[in-house]
Length: 483
Image 1 (cartoon, rainbow, N blue to C red):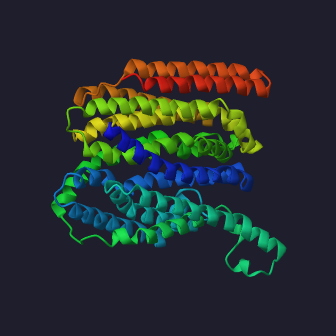
Image 2: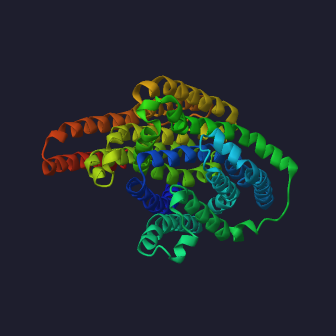
Image 3: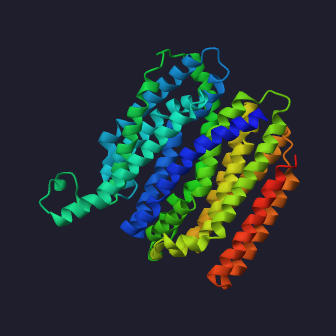
């Protein structure tokens, strides 16, 4: 029972930082919808997807490798030092060339007039990759409060700089054209201020993490690094393949949607609604922060598989509660989603479920991490990525961004199912499969009933939907009394 309480407690702390931070960040989505046209939102969505791919490459599985080897090493400080020095070296080697090739890269990505976007994002990537291991160290040493504090400060700075550049500066310049503000603000930069705000926030995080970074022992163990790179190689492939499944659509839409259908506008609409559906990701990220060090510190005890089975049950219940909580009150989202973006709301149910499947897939992935079969785990991720890419190529030209949503949904569903069966072979866990499928079935029925209530007047509809949500919540309470 103490194991459950420990995981739940850490998840709450990580979750509060993640939830508070993500909700604050989430508020930027409707804010951007007011400030920017869908085409500009499409630029942000497109470039940040490239950033997400490169971030996985730049950390090359080192975070998970650090957890794996620092948690069982007699010299964890040496493992930490080796990991930090490795990431520092590769981050510097990555960033420096962009001071010379950003214009060339901008032309390749079809942003020829904005090489500065590329340079700013490259520096952001370098900083975020460098700080990955200090953040991991805080998690490993069970310091969730400091971890959470720095994360929230980062997001607070990001939001503050966004408001400063996108609202305050234009207001001040409008009322006083000769203001000193014109020395630091130019309307021509436009969406670029989103990247500048991100860069300044990342720099603030780097400063806050300097105490952790300066604690390294400056020991560099080449043999240890080789072992970590070998283990992390599989994690890298899994991460890249998972990102393909999760985000390749945001790169493919500009190329696959016919020009006469305004691909960047479609991408902006899809990207805006994708961000609105981020609440499921908040839950998954919070759970991941707590669960990964948790299972690496276990995994060898006889009762551990039973613990993982119970954890999975509650994970699914909470995930479905989030899905129902958003879908039963989806009309309220129209209050914050600008009219130009509202047509994309039909993709939200698929995005939510796809993210839930991804969370289940991540939770299942302990089988290859604990048995060091990361290569096999990579094959599963690659298989899911290939399926997702093929579906995107087939469906986007015909269905636009809805083809992307369907492809992501099916891709993660397939990965989840394949991972489950392989996990039962290599690290059997007695997951309550029938009960979990029953939860999905009940949630599906409740969702379908809620669609029918759309024809009712608002007050009656929300009364019925609230009653339906309480039914599912009662199911969660009942599950506590059932093993």
